[in-house]
Length: 430
Image 1 (cartoon, rainbow, N blue to C red):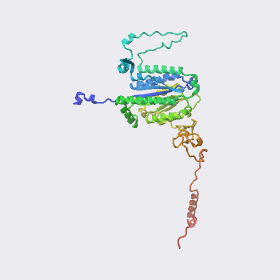
Image 2 (cartoon, helix red, strand yellow; image 1 turned 90 degrees about the horizontal axis):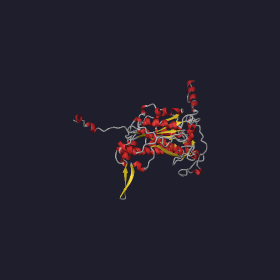
Image 3 (tube, rainbow, N blue to C red; image 1 turned 90 degrees about the vertical axis):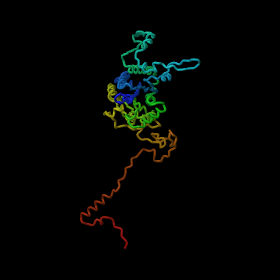
Image 4 (cartoon, one colour; image 1 turned 45 degrees about the horizontal axis):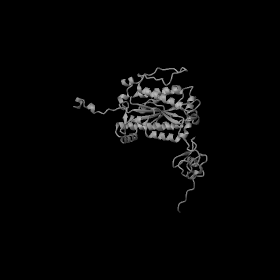
């Protein structure tokens, strides 16, 4: 009967594909981009990254994107733009009636149908003043304050991402002082990874809460799903991080501890970290130590780009597939992973070092007084420890056994007694 009246159709649960969250971290080191000006400029790289983000959004209407800038001395959000707590909660204004304050929600924020509108309502369009035509300044350039392009034919997620990224990136570049660039040669990769993990965790909890119930139950469901093995088996928000780096990893040795903490957190949450390393003129890829370790620990993709002009091709062909679809693809792998670590005393990458048995801190030389510089534990060191490691050659066992066996075989072949060539037997009791 259920098949006849069609009631079975309403009893089936809809199986929707879990959304994919792509978080891109752009290395905006001014010194490195100045060296790459002849091969690829920053504005061209940003335009190609926007095409890559649009391709990710176009693959599924539920997909989400986020973009951060790892700048010198700070990590800034490019998309989504940081908003106040009231805007995040959906409350636009606060009215006071008889001394009682209450929040009034904006209908365009609460109702999803109004939020997706591209054209404004008719009454609002009539009340708003018409835009002034573009005017030119005295030097002939277009006034940036009047340069607005409201193209209604463009897909709204594409337009919102492009406008916010361009606006925030211009603000970041204009507020950067020459002293900030000269004081710091590296960028805040660790801070950008931390912000990305925080945003991913919040989006995962929000998605689990929307599907399950209260926030406590959503957090418990998230922990249960993370404990499972495999990306396809969990019914949660799938996230991944893409890092576009132009700075040498040797400059990141001072951020070794926070970078390794973020790598372990991504490994725990099964969040792959993909690395797109653009080489500087005259540099080698042997210095990308921590980025290789991040990809190897989180099962991500590491690709060094020798031709920066083909950045968009690398992004679309190698980094666009989702983690669940990568099992059916022949992805580029890297066998020669550099597992060297940075010492905690001088922040230098070392091949051989000394490890504290309590906190596992690494030092390039024996600490003064035998005390760990991190946990303060006094370690007992032997007198031989601290010198240059020496490889001791292991002696061969049974060096004369072969010679004795040859003598026995020779005596037996000549018809003699084999015991005559052996040692004198022990006399028995008389």
